[in-house]
Each structure stands twice: as C-alpha cells, then as structure tokens.
Image (tube, rainbow, N blue to C red; front, side, top):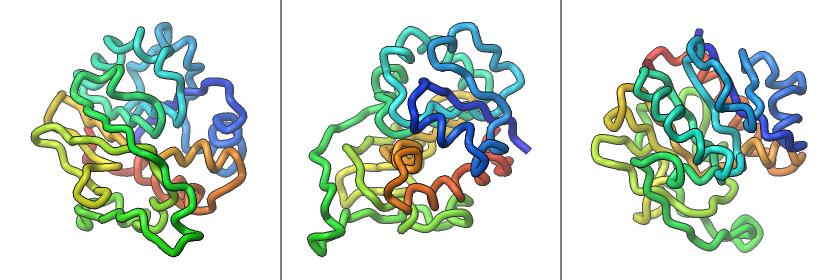
Length: 203
C-alpha cells in the first residue's frame, strides 16, 4: 500500500475532505501547506497537492516538490493549484467555465482517451464530469487520460519528465465535496483515493 500525504491549507473544504471519517483513513500524513518547507517527505509515496491550494505557498517550495518527483515519488496536482507556476513541465490554458451545461442540455465534451488505464477500474467518465477551468498540454511522453474535445487534457499522467510520476488534473473534487455540493465529486474521490493507495505502477 502506498503511503499518502496531502496538503491542508486550513480551509473548510480541506478539513471536510482530509479529516472527516469518509476519507480520513486514505491519508497517512496531513501536511499544513504553510509548513511544507519543513515537512519530511522521505517516507511518502504519494503527495497530493489538494484542490485550490494557493500557488503562492507552492512556488517557494518548487525545488522541494521537484526533488520529491526526482526521488521517484508520485505528485498529484489537483485543480486550481496553478501547477504551471511551480512545475516546469506543466503548460496550462485558462478557459471560460460552463457551470450550467447540465441544465442547458449540453455537454462538456469530455473524452476518456485511455480506457485501459487502471484509474478507470475505480471511476467512470461521469464521475469526472462537473466542470473545469481550463486544460493542459501534456508534455512529450506523458499520457492524457481525459481530454476536453480536441483542446487539451483535464487529467494526465507524466512518467517521462522526471524519475517519478506526475498526475495533473483541472478537476477540483475536494473543494466541491467539502462544500457539500456536486455528487460527482464525491464519487470521484471515492474511486480516486483508493486508486492512489493501491496502484503499484507509480513508483
């Protein structure tokens, strides 16, 4: 089993996700984001940069985060954490957010482009469908798991840029689960966290 640490910025949505009973056992360590520079990550296999962690707390720690990856760790950059600001290999494009597609009878245009990936034994595309705030251009050698139309990726895995594994997503399930709305986000976490805990292909 992988040892998982997650960053806590002290918000209500991080508290509900990280500390309440539904997911508490998924996390072996919880690191206060403002103390990341002092945190010992040597026994951690997976570090989750929790949704909507302020990038200003991460930019000063870019060397530490890069070192975690170079040491073979798995780093998960969740939505609205600005990973393009603290990871050299991430390219991001902001787009308008359609919050009401589900009421207007439209579609977000999401496509599962790696159905054979082990993640999809734990979640479905519907579990990853609520909204997003932009998309990524995966670097050479990386593998997109979910694309939005032909524009780019909202969830990809990069095992080529470093000695570790980088999972990057535009999705922010911790925020919505912690805010008590959008049931898909809870379903996403119900599958995603056990996937991170058990998948041995990451390190």
